[in-house]
Length: 102
Image 1 (tube, rainbow, N blue to C red):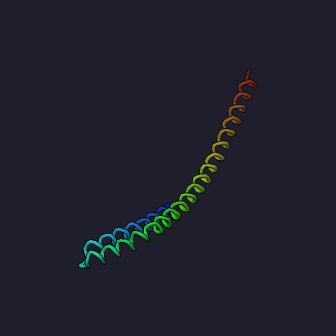
Image 2: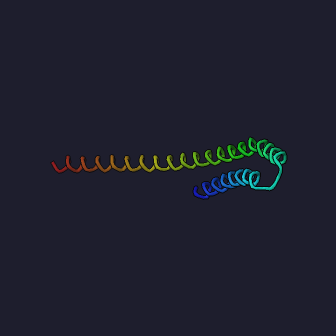
Image 3: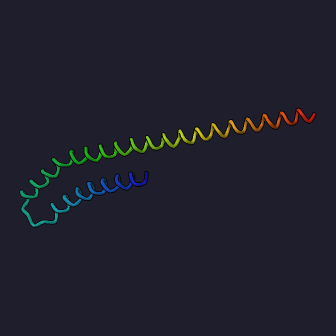
């Protein structure tokens, strides 16, 4: 589960870092205003695709996490049912022993 979180964090960081790097390069390069506007336009055109990729990745990982949580919940629920059944059985046995002693 933590491996999935690490992958998601890495991909998110990669996309965010790439976006920030592209924006920073626009402002810190010795280019004319026209060249900067062209680069900014190209970067702006790429952002929707990058956002869609990030959204898809997050959706896939959240589905994996949900499935994992559901599996864990089902396992916990099964253990709880077994524990309750064992408690009821022990209670019945104790009640039977008390009745036999009377």
